Image (cartoon, rainbow, N blue to C red; front, side, top):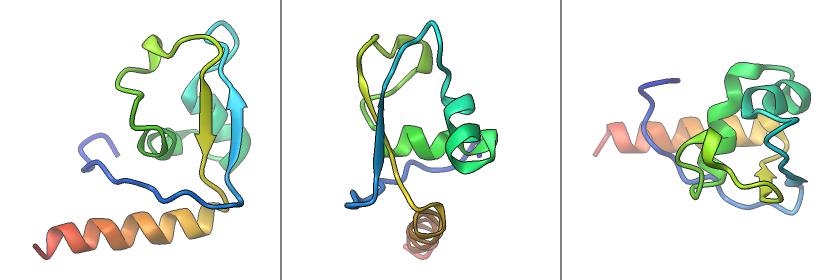
Length: 86
């Protein structure tokens, strides 16, 4: 996912959120806990475009977690395909 384009992920009423604590949390571990796959951390970054660099996330920031995962993946794939076809 490293060279993937930026994708704006839509808000859903089913989204979750957490209050970020940099001493206890990392995006890859949050993705692992919520999605069962730590490599999906990029979804969290796409859902929170104000995050440019994970280690600069201030304590107390609200991190949006798009949910359910299947819907999010379908949206991301569709948007990437749309961008490829332009």
